[in-house]
Length: 162
Image (cartoon, rainbow, N blue to C red; front, side):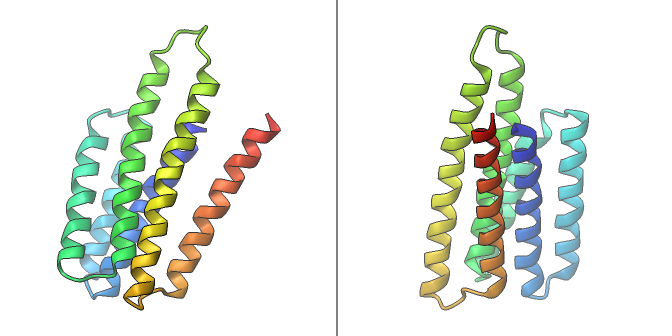
């Protein structure tokens, strides 16, 4: 469950940053962001613990530069929010491995995912309000919101089945 959330947050982070930069004509930088995302996924597969902190820093810097130069705020906020989400999930996965067998690992995992998902939801809500105020709410942004909502509903249904 945590691995799915981690991988999807990395994909959403890098895709939204790359799309935000590509909208403004920085396509070569967008390609580098996608390569960075593939490297992040490779680091998850190889279990490189240090990479998520570096990735969080780089994604935050890219988001901040995008906001500084007036790029669409929703894509930059989404990149930053999901980078933070992915960093937290990476750290949480490490802590789950160190828990005792008699701990309620599934319950702890569910509560943590619920809290961090609510944080991401509020961040996307405020980014959507910002985009509405600036009249930059686009079809693509709506598709991202629908995708994130469907991802959350799928996770909720998975919890209810168990």
